[in-house]
Image 1: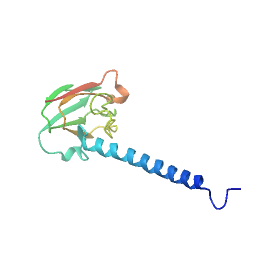
Image 2 (image 1 turned 60 degrees about the vertical axis):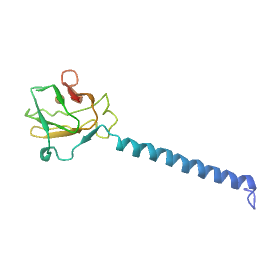
Image 3 (image 1 turned 120 degrees about the horizontal axis):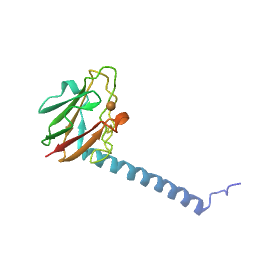
Image 4 (image 1 turned 180 degrees about the horizontal axis):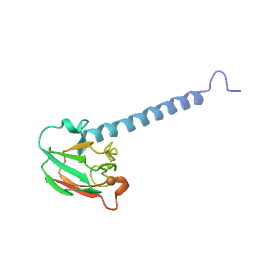
Length: 142
Ligand SMILES: [Cu+2]
């Protein structure tokens, strides 16, 4: 049976538990907000409608046809899969973009495109997830 009326230590334990929980939520929420503000890349929601300075890379025959490109900060790289019957993706598995939400891009069927705006200068290596042994590329952002 719990003590009645509640003992002083029982009330304090409840308060302490609430304070710990509240502090924990705040600690989780703050870094997430900060990380989003500092994302080094922006994955564009509609690749085909992307505007601005765009570097196009075709995907065909199990390869990124221009595997190394150099762009300026703020410019866009757009990949388009030209290979019928073989899906590919763009996956920033390591490097500055690896923790960005969506760093592992969706599988692109033939005709599909994927576009990324690069914000932070750096070297962005990427792969195609299922064909990582042979499909690698690099975007250098100046
Ligand atoms: Cu692939």
